[in-house]
Image (cartoon, rainbow, N blue to C red; front, side, top):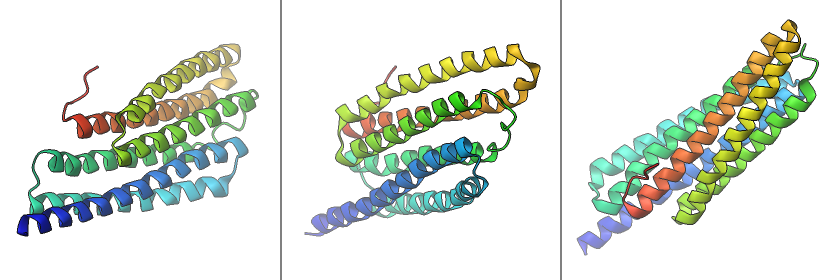
Length: 221
């Protein structure tokens, strides 16, 4: 009877943590899309909102980590339960980093105003941000449902982000070669695209954690 009570309590505490993780992921996905929208529209107010919103994500990560560490310390879980608790720490770290990338993007809103070919480039960046947000939604659904197939789909989708980053790099390099005045704004745009690529990498990290959670095996390249 005592063991049943402990298991039930562990499941309840873990569910609370995973609910917080889903909330955190929703906040991060919004930040990613809003930061790209602020860049596209030159919207200072929206950029400021994204920057200020990052602190809420950081506080939520801290809250999740404290709960997870306390859960491990008090319940002393074994096997699959231990994997579940450890995975929450890994996922929260990836989400926090994605929030940081969105905040960094928001800082660069007015660093590209004098770039004449900005509209098509910004469309590409918005498309990338929407794709990363969709990947994040997919991988978090996989995490909650322990859906290995969906996690791998999210992981494979990262290749599209990598391809878009490479294409954008070549496009921006052409603009820089055409006119030295384009070098500074294009450099900012390169940093932005690279941060979106890194966000995609964090989605991949979460997908790999889902694989570990479900199978107990680390995913090898």
